[in-house]
Image (cartoon, rainbow, N blue to C red; front, side, top):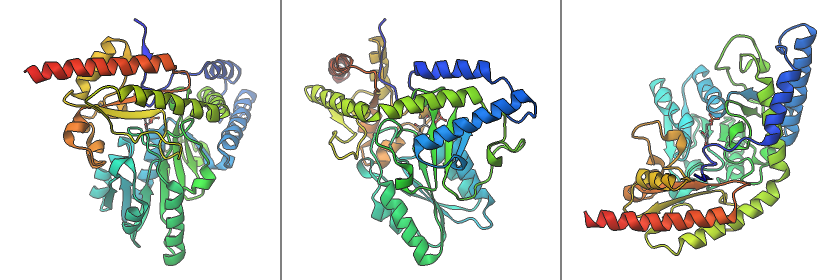
Length: 390
Ligand code: PLP
């Protein structure tokens, strides 16, 4: 069966250049970068050039780049660091956050922190609402850049400006952490302009290998999660996966080099998808319709098929060769967690229960998109008819 892959927000196909970079560096750099012999020193030098490359691609300094096993770990390092604070304070999170952030709520509250959730109606956090949750007890704000479910883009630059003003007025610094996993290749990305204190990235979301990621740290002190060998400036102990880092850089470089064209193409494909879906009754967009104002990434679209549970439509589409997702693949293993996020974004529980996420990428084609829209319309209409009869 020919598989049409529309689950790029869950994971992307690995890029050929990333595979080549992996094979070449794994063969060439056999030593442990912490070893003192020549093989080790060669690996350490190579790792340093890779760090320079990551930093220059992201327009930051090498010292600000910490390699991790992925965004779940990057998020965990920042959030667990809070536990080292002398007095537990307040943490503000958007309801859009990925489970690797949201699930810290329980631990933080148990440890005496106040966790304030800020809802995101329609997928957007209101900066004024968020500002009203900030007070002298606030220690951290977690706000993702691109929603992995709705594709909406948050105004991080305004939030960081607001927090700088708060700092100037009260002499209290609030750490702004940003899960930027879904941003790479999906919107123009300028880390220094965003003004965040930390950001998480995951290689497998942009054509790199799984199990590899980045934690960007602008300057605030954080505590390591894993302790031991002192690698990664003492922030992430464990032998560095040098070949995977090289593969990630190859994918990052390739993705960013084509980002502008890819974005324009993505907007065009999204317009086709929306137009084709609009011919089918009972299908509504939960993500905002695409515009040119960059407040939505074209590559992630969540829709709802009236009366057809997400799991059923996802399954039927898969039987026809289309891979889409019911909600976020990342929460598929967490019972009871599915689509809570959509309800918090103001959608009805019925609409949320019937939501499917379509996500695509640079190699998706217009023909594929049209076939998908056709299959969704046809199958949803069929299932709606069947469920009405019962
Ligand atoms: N944050 C977001 C927004 C994601 O979409 C994902 C995807 O799974 C993650 C974090 C976790 O990333 P990783 O798979 O690298 O742990």
